[in-house]
Image 1 (cartoon, helix red, strand yellow):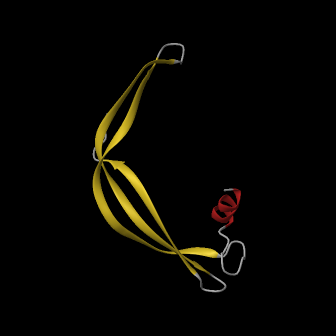
Image 2: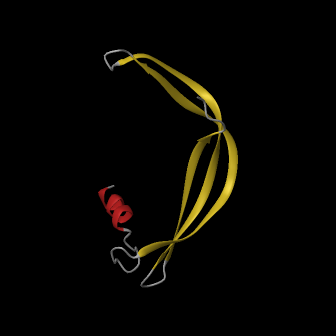
Length: 92
């Protein structure tokens, strides 16, 4: 786990083991799907603490991306899947 964190922070190449080698070269939208997102609403009281807290599900969409990284030194490629949840509408 610690080694994985070091690889993510310093973008170490798994082939040539050089630090700061991986560069993001491409980001493609693979798919979009409808999801329900858990939203937490809080209302502060006069002292600054939390008086009420309500959790509810709101409609949204999940975008799944395919991100390609390539090494600047040896040319090795690494493909990672990532997703991002977004609400369909914003409330005031």
